[in-house]
Image (cartoon, rainbow, N blue to C red; front, top):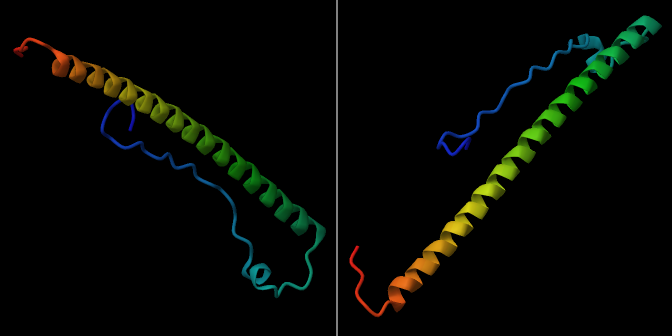
Length: 100
């Protein structure tokens, strides 16, 4: 939930951009890969790893913020619970009737 609203937090989609490898490579039927193909594939993998690491970092930050917000809400609830407990004792222990 955000900012005390009852709406659930929305996930932000972060597109990953990578090119598919030729079918022969995926099936293991390619017999040899020349140096430029090897370099290109390595660059694609490096790009993918960078994008993935960026997504992990962003999601970790989102989760840390959510944990912080939930910890604050738990602390607020505990404070309210304590106040209600004190007030209930005041009403219970009052010698005179209290009209509300």
